[in-house]
Length: 273
Ligand code: BTN
Image (cartoon, rainbow, N blue to C red; front, side, top):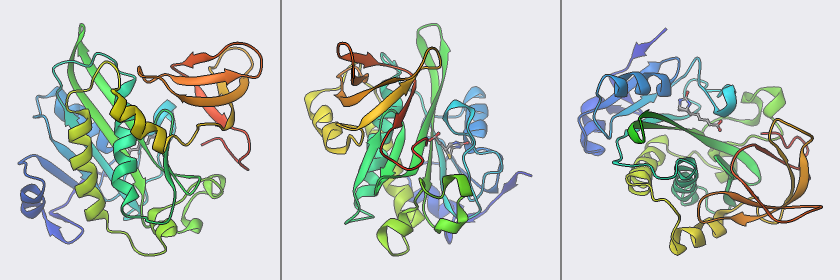
């Protein structure tokens, strides 16, 4: 059942609106999915910058129709409405958002390695700590709106994750060895996402590519690409191209640009995030 909340992390709604410098902040103690509501609100004309945030999601959605486990008080579950003039290269949105999330998290888990797994996973200490989903609505070539949804595991302990995820998931508290503030994380994520995704470019400039290199968790890892068709292709990830494609060197054959598909890393125990 959808339940509105008047505060989050001890901050009243009016305080959060002031803190994040916008009138449109919607907070729920429980909702099916912040993304679903944000898409509905955006369809009805919600302003750019509208935020939907929840303490619990009963139907949190991940990429590829997967479920996003969103236990009450466990993570940050947030969606942001953007209305860019153009989105010349939709592939870049989840990448830029993922990179933004990684930079936001880095300062909170000092000591733990933070990375981005192409195209949308936030990785901390070689485990999945969060993910990004970007949903767009188009009017011909022009975007009507984009909803960016970010989920980050914050307070979960290992036992809180479903058994199938226990070896591959991590929370920021687990990585930092202390309680990480969801409020501080939200501050950082909102700030960095609006800056990096406000006017998404067609290609990544040198500065952003260099930052990707710093956070590229897949680089030099043995992995397979599953595009849903024929047998998965085995090889090594070698970097990110300026247009956001994953650069992949198959064991046999020439360097490839991958723009869709699931990347499964070979050396991890249960690598299928
Ligand atoms: C993924 O890694 O598959 C992306 C996960 C995105 C989860 C977030 S939580 C907030 C927002 N609401 C949703 O239903 N999904 C996104």
